[in-house]
Amino acid sequence: MVDRTESIRFRSPGMAWDLAGNLYLPEEFDPQNTYPALVSVHPIGSCKEQTSGNVYAKALAKAGYAVLAFDASFQGASGGLPRLVEDPAQRVEDIRVAVDHLVTLPYVDADRIGGIGICGGGGYVINAAMTERRLKAVTSVTGVNFGRLSRESFTEYDPIAAMEKVAAQRTAEARGEDVRVNDYLPPSVEAGRAAGLTDIDVLEATDYYKTSRGQSTGGATSAAFSRSAAANGWDAFLGAEQLLTQPLLVVIGDKPGGFGAYRDGQEIYGRAASRDKRLIVLPGTSHYELYDQPEPTGAAIEAAVEFFGTHL
Image (tube, rainbow, N blue to C red):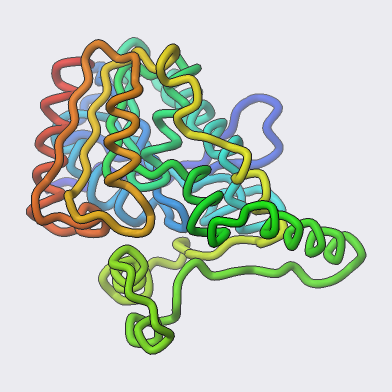
Protein backbone atom coordinates (compact mmCIF):
# COMPACT_ATOMS: atom_id res chain seq x y z
CA MET A 1 0.00 0.00 0.00
CA VAL A 2 1.39 3.40 -1.03
CA ASP A 3 1.60 6.04 1.72
CA ARG A 4 -0.08 9.13 0.34
CA THR A 5 0.35 11.27 3.45
CA GLU A 6 2.03 14.67 3.04
CA SER A 7 3.27 16.86 5.89
CA ILE A 8 2.46 20.48 5.09
CA ARG A 9 2.44 23.97 6.59
CA PHE A 10 -0.09 26.62 5.57
CA ARG A 11 -1.60 29.93 6.59
CA SER A 12 -4.10 32.50 5.34
CA PRO A 13 -3.04 35.96 4.09
CA GLY A 14 -2.48 38.21 7.08
CA MET A 15 -2.06 35.32 9.51
CA ALA A 16 1.08 35.67 11.64
CA TRP A 17 1.91 31.97 11.99
CA ASP A 18 1.69 28.69 10.10
CA LEU A 19 -0.55 25.76 10.85
CA ALA A 20 0.99 22.29 10.60
CA GLY A 21 -1.03 19.62 8.86
CA ASN A 22 -0.96 16.10 7.51
CA LEU A 23 -2.72 15.76 4.17
CA TYR A 24 -4.04 12.26 3.58
CA LEU A 25 -4.65 11.45 -0.08
CA PRO A 26 -6.47 8.50 -1.71
CA GLU A 27 -4.34 5.45 -2.43
CA GLU A 28 -4.95 5.78 -6.18
CA PHE A 29 -4.37 9.53 -6.11
CA ASP A 30 -3.96 11.20 -9.51
CA PRO A 31 -3.15 14.94 -9.42
CA GLN A 32 -4.97 15.36 -12.73
CA ASN A 33 -8.27 14.33 -11.14
CA THR A 34 -10.44 16.21 -8.68
CA TYR A 35 -11.55 14.86 -5.32
CA PRO A 36 -13.97 15.76 -2.54
CA ALA A 37 -12.10 16.95 0.54
CA LEU A 38 -12.51 16.98 4.31
CA VAL A 39 -11.09 18.93 7.22
CA SER A 40 -10.48 16.64 10.22
CA VAL A 41 -10.46 18.45 13.59
CA HIS A 42 -8.66 16.99 16.61
CA PRO A 43 -9.98 16.78 20.20
CA ILE A 44 -9.12 19.10 23.07
CA GLY A 45 -5.52 18.44 24.16
CA SER A 46 -4.86 16.25 21.14
CA CYS A 47 -2.94 16.64 17.89
CA LYS A 48 -3.12 15.75 14.21
CA GLU A 49 -1.20 12.47 14.67
CA GLN A 50 -3.84 11.04 16.99
CA THR A 51 -7.44 10.04 16.31
CA SER A 52 -8.33 12.84 13.87
CA GLY A 53 -5.43 11.82 11.65
CA ASN A 54 -4.31 8.23 12.14
CA VAL A 55 -7.85 6.85 12.49
CA TYR A 56 -10.46 9.03 10.78
CA ALA A 57 -8.44 10.94 8.16
CA LYS A 58 -6.58 7.81 7.14
CA ALA A 59 -9.78 5.79 6.70
CA LEU A 60 -11.61 8.55 4.83
CA ALA A 61 -8.66 9.02 2.47
CA LYS A 62 -8.85 5.31 1.74
CA ALA A 63 -12.50 5.89 0.84
CA GLY A 64 -11.49 8.47 -1.78
CA TYR A 65 -11.26 11.82 0.02
CA ALA A 66 -8.41 14.28 0.36
CA VAL A 67 -8.35 14.82 4.13
CA LEU A 68 -6.49 17.56 6.00
CA ALA A 69 -5.81 16.88 9.69
CA PHE A 70 -4.00 19.77 11.38
CA ASP A 71 -2.74 21.02 14.72
CA ALA A 72 -4.66 23.89 16.31
CA SER A 73 -3.00 27.27 16.65
CA PHE A 74 -0.75 27.47 19.73
CA GLN A 75 -0.62 23.67 19.90
CA GLY A 76 1.34 20.73 18.51
CA ALA A 77 3.59 21.68 15.59
CA SER A 78 1.52 24.73 14.63
CA GLY A 79 2.70 28.24 15.39
CA GLY A 80 1.28 30.92 17.64
CA LEU A 81 2.21 32.36 21.02
CA PRO A 82 1.73 31.86 23.88
CA ARG A 83 1.76 28.07 23.71
CA LEU A 84 -0.91 25.64 24.89
CA VAL A 85 -3.85 28.01 24.42
CA GLU A 86 -7.27 26.42 23.86
CA ASP A 87 -9.24 29.31 22.38
CA PRO A 88 -12.58 28.23 20.83
CA ALA A 89 -12.82 31.27 18.55
CA GLN A 90 -9.33 30.61 17.19
CA ARG A 91 -10.07 26.91 16.82
CA VAL A 92 -13.03 27.77 14.60
CA GLU A 93 -10.93 30.25 12.62
CA ASP A 94 -8.33 27.50 12.12
CA ILE A 95 -10.99 25.44 10.36
CA ARG A 96 -11.62 28.32 7.97
CA VAL A 97 -7.87 28.57 7.34
CA ALA A 98 -7.76 24.84 6.57
CA VAL A 99 -10.57 25.30 4.06
CA ASP A 100 -8.65 28.25 2.59
CA HIS A 101 -5.76 25.90 1.94
CA LEU A 102 -7.89 23.14 0.46
CA VAL A 103 -9.51 25.45 -2.10
CA THR A 104 -6.05 26.35 -3.44
CA LEU A 105 -5.24 22.74 -4.30
CA PRO A 106 -5.95 22.02 -7.98
CA TYR A 107 -7.11 18.47 -7.28
CA VAL A 108 -9.71 19.50 -4.65
CA ASP A 109 -13.28 20.14 -5.76
CA ALA A 110 -14.05 23.37 -3.89
CA ASP A 111 -17.78 22.64 -4.09
CA ARG A 112 -17.37 19.31 -2.26
CA ILE A 113 -15.68 20.10 1.04
CA GLY A 114 -16.91 18.77 4.37
CA GLY A 115 -15.74 18.60 7.95
CA ILE A 116 -15.38 15.93 10.60
CA GLY A 117 -14.37 16.45 14.22
CA ILE A 118 -13.79 14.24 17.25
CA CYS A 119 -14.59 15.26 20.84
CA GLY A 120 -14.07 19.04 21.12
CA GLY A 121 -13.28 19.01 17.40
CA GLY A 122 -16.82 17.84 16.77
CA GLY A 123 -18.19 20.90 18.55
CA TYR A 124 -15.78 23.17 16.70
CA VAL A 125 -16.63 21.86 13.24
CA ILE A 126 -20.34 22.20 13.96
CA ASN A 127 -19.84 25.79 15.08
CA ALA A 128 -17.70 26.57 12.05
CA ALA A 129 -20.29 25.19 9.64
CA MET A 130 -22.88 27.69 10.85
CA THR A 131 -20.99 30.57 9.22
CA GLU A 132 -18.53 28.78 6.91
CA ARG A 133 -20.70 27.97 3.90
CA ARG A 134 -17.84 26.27 2.07
CA LEU A 135 -18.43 23.34 4.43
CA LYS A 136 -21.19 21.41 2.68
CA ALA A 137 -21.69 18.62 5.24
CA VAL A 138 -20.41 17.92 8.76
CA THR A 139 -19.88 14.88 10.96
CA SER A 140 -19.37 15.01 14.72
CA VAL A 141 -17.92 11.90 16.38
CA THR A 142 -18.49 11.87 20.14
CA GLY A 143 -18.56 15.66 19.86
CA VAL A 144 -18.34 17.91 22.91
CA ASN A 145 -19.41 21.53 23.39
CA PHE A 146 -16.22 22.84 24.99
CA GLY A 147 -17.91 26.00 26.23
CA ARG A 148 -20.48 24.00 28.17
CA LEU A 149 -17.78 21.68 29.50
CA SER A 150 -15.67 24.65 30.60
CA ARG A 151 -18.53 26.29 32.49
CA GLU A 152 -19.50 23.05 34.19
CA SER A 153 -17.03 20.25 34.96
CA PHE A 154 -13.82 22.17 34.27
CA THR A 155 -14.78 24.90 36.77
CA GLU A 156 -16.57 22.56 39.19
CA TYR A 157 -19.81 24.34 38.24
CA ASP A 158 -18.54 27.69 39.48
CA PRO A 159 -17.30 29.58 36.40
CA ILE A 160 -17.27 32.99 38.10
CA ALA A 161 -14.92 31.85 40.86
CA ALA A 162 -12.75 30.06 38.29
CA MET A 163 -12.51 33.16 36.11
CA GLU A 164 -11.52 35.28 39.10
CA LYS A 165 -8.58 32.92 39.60
CA VAL A 166 -7.74 33.11 35.92
CA ALA A 167 -7.79 36.91 36.10
CA ALA A 168 -5.39 36.90 39.04
CA GLN A 169 -3.05 34.49 37.27
CA ARG A 170 -3.06 36.53 34.08
CA THR A 171 -2.18 39.65 36.06
CA ALA A 172 0.67 37.78 37.75
CA GLU A 173 2.02 36.60 34.40
CA ALA A 174 1.73 40.09 32.94
CA ARG A 175 3.96 41.24 35.81
CA GLY A 176 6.60 38.65 35.05
CA GLU A 177 5.60 35.40 36.77
CA ASP A 178 5.94 32.08 34.94
CA VAL A 179 3.03 30.79 32.88
CA ARG A 180 0.90 28.31 34.80
CA VAL A 181 0.12 25.18 32.76
CA ASN A 182 -2.60 22.80 33.96
CA ASP A 183 -2.82 19.19 32.84
CA TYR A 184 -6.32 18.02 32.07
CA LEU A 185 -5.51 14.50 33.29
CA PRO A 186 -3.71 12.60 36.05
CA PRO A 187 -0.29 11.09 35.15
CA SER A 188 -1.70 7.56 35.02
CA VAL A 189 -4.92 5.61 35.50
CA GLU A 190 -3.55 4.22 38.75
CA ALA A 191 -2.75 7.72 40.03
CA GLY A 192 -6.22 8.88 39.06
CA ARG A 193 -7.90 6.07 40.94
CA ALA A 194 -5.65 6.64 43.95
CA ALA A 195 -6.81 10.27 43.94
CA GLY A 196 -10.43 9.12 44.02
CA LEU A 197 -11.27 9.73 40.36
CA THR A 198 -13.99 7.43 39.07
CA ASP A 199 -15.37 9.14 35.95
CA ILE A 200 -15.16 6.88 32.90
CA ASP A 201 -14.12 9.72 30.59
CA VAL A 202 -11.25 10.91 32.78
CA LEU A 203 -9.88 7.40 33.33
CA GLU A 204 -10.24 6.32 29.71
CA ALA A 205 -8.73 9.61 28.50
CA THR A 206 -5.73 8.93 30.73
CA ASP A 207 -5.41 5.42 29.32
CA TYR A 208 -5.46 6.86 25.79
CA TYR A 209 -3.24 9.91 26.19
CA LYS A 210 -0.78 8.76 28.88
CA THR A 211 0.14 5.33 27.49
CA SER A 212 1.48 3.91 24.25
CA ARG A 213 -2.12 3.37 23.15
CA GLY A 214 -2.43 6.96 21.92
CA GLN A 215 0.42 9.00 23.36
CA SER A 216 2.01 11.46 20.95
CA THR A 217 4.50 14.31 21.36
CA GLY A 218 2.02 16.90 20.10
CA GLY A 219 -0.85 15.70 22.28
CA ALA A 220 -0.10 17.78 25.36
CA THR A 221 -3.40 17.27 27.26
CA SER A 222 -2.56 20.54 29.01
CA ALA A 223 -3.39 24.22 28.70
CA ALA A 224 -2.26 27.65 29.84
CA PHE A 225 -4.55 28.43 32.77
CA SER A 226 -4.36 32.20 32.30
CA ARG A 227 -5.86 31.90 28.81
CA SER A 228 -8.80 29.67 29.76
CA ALA A 229 -11.44 32.28 30.62
CA ALA A 230 -12.73 32.91 27.09
CA ALA A 231 -14.06 29.36 26.75
CA ASN A 232 -16.55 30.03 29.55
CA GLY A 233 -18.33 32.61 27.40
CA TRP A 234 -18.46 30.45 24.27
CA ASP A 235 -21.14 28.03 23.07
CA ALA A 236 -20.54 25.61 20.20
CA PHE A 237 -24.26 25.34 19.48
CA LEU A 238 -25.33 28.98 19.66
CA GLY A 239 -27.51 29.76 16.64
CA ALA A 240 -27.85 26.16 15.48
CA GLU A 241 -31.63 26.43 15.13
CA GLN A 242 -31.19 29.08 12.44
CA LEU A 243 -27.70 28.73 11.00
CA LEU A 244 -26.81 25.03 11.01
CA THR A 245 -28.53 24.01 7.79
CA GLN A 246 -25.94 21.69 6.22
CA PRO A 247 -26.44 17.93 6.38
CA LEU A 248 -25.34 16.70 9.79
CA LEU A 249 -24.22 13.30 11.10
CA VAL A 250 -23.79 12.86 14.84
CA VAL A 251 -22.19 9.67 16.22
CA ILE A 252 -22.10 9.03 19.98
CA GLY A 253 -21.76 6.09 22.33
CA ASP A 254 -24.45 5.26 24.87
CA LYS A 255 -22.09 5.21 27.89
CA PRO A 256 -22.29 8.76 29.30
CA GLY A 257 -19.26 10.27 30.99
CA GLY A 258 -18.18 13.50 32.58
CA PHE A 259 -17.16 15.19 29.33
CA GLY A 260 -20.77 15.07 28.15
CA ALA A 261 -20.62 13.82 24.56
CA TYR A 262 -23.80 11.76 24.94
CA ARG A 263 -25.70 14.79 26.21
CA ASP A 264 -24.21 17.18 23.65
CA GLY A 265 -24.89 14.82 20.75
CA GLN A 266 -28.54 14.52 21.66
CA GLU A 267 -28.81 18.29 22.08
CA ILE A 268 -27.30 19.34 18.76
CA TYR A 269 -29.27 16.72 16.88
CA GLY A 270 -32.46 18.20 18.29
CA ARG A 271 -31.47 21.83 17.78
CA ALA A 272 -29.88 21.76 14.31
CA ALA A 273 -31.87 23.36 11.49
CA SER A 274 -30.50 20.74 9.09
CA ARG A 275 -33.23 19.10 7.06
CA ASP A 276 -31.00 16.07 6.59
CA LYS A 277 -29.63 15.06 9.98
CA ARG A 278 -28.82 11.71 11.49
CA LEU A 279 -28.04 10.58 15.03
CA ILE A 280 -26.27 7.26 15.58
CA VAL A 281 -26.01 5.98 19.15
CA LEU A 282 -23.63 3.04 19.38
CA PRO A 283 -24.61 0.58 22.13
CA GLY A 284 -22.08 -0.34 24.80
CA THR A 285 -19.67 2.34 23.59
CA SER A 286 -17.81 4.98 25.57
CA HIS A 287 -16.36 8.32 24.48
CA TYR A 288 -12.75 7.12 24.15
CA GLU A 289 -13.62 3.87 22.44
CA LEU A 290 -14.65 6.11 19.53
CA TYR A 291 -11.06 7.38 19.36
CA ASP A 292 -9.33 4.20 18.31
CA GLN A 293 -11.14 0.94 19.08
CA PRO A 294 -11.79 -1.02 15.87
CA GLU A 295 -15.48 -1.88 16.26
CA PRO A 296 -16.89 1.53 17.28
CA THR A 297 -14.55 3.55 15.06
CA GLY A 298 -15.32 1.18 12.22
CA ALA A 299 -19.04 1.84 12.67
CA ALA A 300 -18.47 5.61 12.81
CA ILE A 301 -16.26 5.55 9.72
CA GLU A 302 -18.73 3.42 7.79
CA ALA A 303 -21.50 5.88 8.62
CA ALA A 304 -19.31 8.87 7.68
CA VAL A 305 -18.31 7.34 4.34
CA GLU A 306 -21.95 6.75 3.47
CA PHE A 307 -22.96 10.20 4.71
CA PHE A 308 -20.27 12.13 2.86
CA GLY A 309 -20.80 9.95 -0.21
CA THR A 310 -24.40 11.15 -0.31
CA HIS A 311 -23.74 14.82 0.38
CA LEU A 312 -20.37 15.50 -1.25
